[in-house]
Image 1 (cartoon, rainbow, N blue to C red):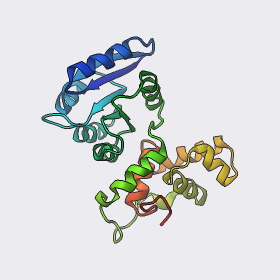
Image 2: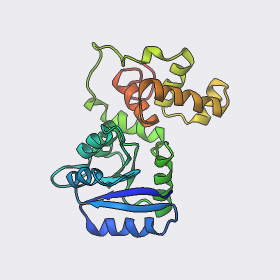
Image 3: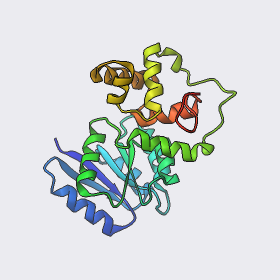
Image 4: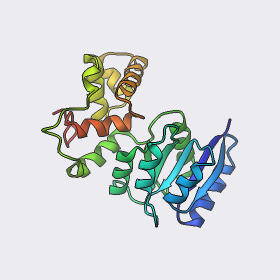
Amino acid sequence: MAIRVMLVDDQVLLRTGFRMVLAAQPDMEVVAEAGDGAEAIEALRSTEVDVVLMDVRMPRLDGVEATRRICERPDAPKVLILTTFDLDEYAFSGLKAGASGFMLKDVPPAELLAAIRSVHSGDAVVAPSTTRRLLDRFSPMLPSRSDEPQHKDIARLTEREREVMLLVAQGLSNGEIAGRLVLSEATVKTHVGRILTKLELRDRVQVVVLAYETGLVRAGGGPH
């Protein structure tokens, strides 16, 4: 079945360009378009969507708030934030709102298509190191939780899962974690999957965000 994509951007020309690229793919179909976040949410009521390409700076309802509302849905599609600038505070806010990653608007078509396929298969498309740089830059925006309990389910993680979580949060790939812990990459992937399940997170991007929010990792990428 083709990946069902919704394009959300207030620039019609940009949507047209993305639609042309996606329409040429045998495994993708643009099933909806919207000019702002409110239109996107309305469209989801009547259209089944797998991946949303979401602009952030739009009238009425911006992409960050739209992403937050979409990701709260039980049957939420994956959201890819589209941004003009790398390390944009909007990209940071979009990740916190539940997006599975962000892409620059001038990304080469092949990378955009690969990102859509990755997100659809359940992976995050922002390199963990890029996510970490975003969080390092914008960590002052995170609420201070020094006096609050950690995420209630972190205590459910095994010692090994906690080790893996810390390394994910520091920006290491599965292969790098495997080398560090002397495990197979398949084993690391299994651990990451269990971490996501236990903590009810969508992908490894959300693992990084949670690690910062709870103080497990501090700005700079190191463990607390």
